[in-house]
Image (cartoon, rainbow, N blue to C red; front, side, top):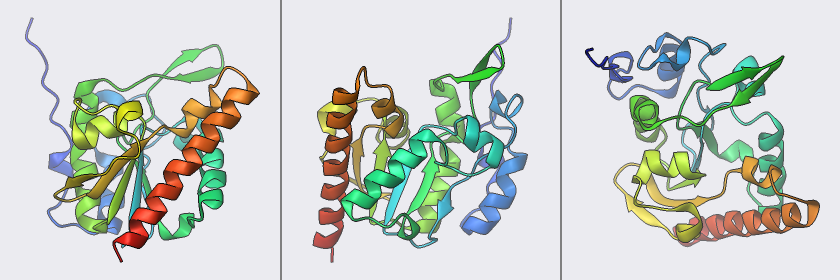
Length: 213
């Protein structure tokens, strides 16, 4: 049997396109099969010339229904952490490595499934186009999928969190956990500790930005 090769997102992206043009184009993307069960593509949002760009893994259930990134439970925790770290979300740009919600149905619930390597690779051109349009000084990868999409599999979230790596289009790249990982903590004490560590990582991002002038 022949192996089907998916085209990736390149065919739907205009070179040097502005964010508004990209957002209008992303609903038509057929670069992988994730568009089929999803309600809609969820593009990034935020300041078009943001100094800090945050990348998550993929939209969740609420994001898929509303068409906006980071508005579900993890997004609300993310907003609280940003506030404690002294970062105004309105000054940032927030997106995901994969633009469609990947899930499996269990009764009436839609349960998140991790994107595979080919899906991450297929969607990477959208991320690269966002880098080119936003020109961030700092990019923060929230979780392993985002980190893989930007820096490859050789990097590890827990090993490399708090470190900064130069990138040709994403500025200075760092990583920390995804807020959803905090929500999955085994008990309230662990959840509190994980949240505090997350806030410290975001505070380090703010200090790094201050150092860049």
